[in-house]
Image (cartoon, rainbow, N blue to C red):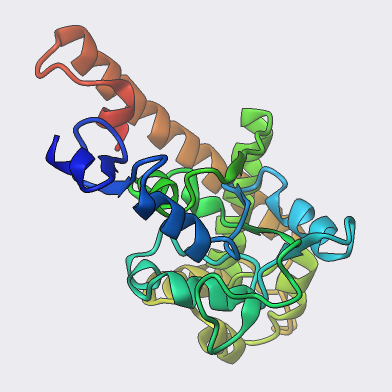
Length: 255
């Protein structure tokens, strides 16, 4: 009742977050300040075609669609430090530095949107997005699960082998010409150690590259090991569900 008198409502039953209640003066003010914000969010899934859709939309598929400037994924609602910068900083991804909330002269008719695959599985992303953009359309791309799993693992494997995130295996292999490059490209201690192990195992006799058949075997072996490990985790969770000690869902058990 107190929230209603203030023109507010909870974003979801039982959740502490609030947003302006429809029809209230606060709601009208909120709509005015967010009119230059995205009207749609592409939330995933990772390796489900989000990069292709982003490319198509950004390439002028429709003259009124406007994606954010800069890198593909904004992560405003998923990464805490990004969200803490506030909505004005978020709007600046379209209007540049110095953007003012609710002000986008000459661009009011744009259908703005963004693509961030982390919004699908980050726990607070949906609540945060709904609080700021309650009427935004949500676009979700799905993919046949087995193909998506292999594609996702392939991306992680490339990071491990190449020591950096690359878009294609060809880019990965072209960047691997010496141990020094592996160390230079490493994105973390784990990736550095893993990449050097692969280098030691698959280095060509001349020492100037990696053997493709060896890399293929490494990929298959690691994918099989990862699949077996995840199946064991699922089996443990299913056993816990059957024992009902303590009662929990499969999703919560798997984290």
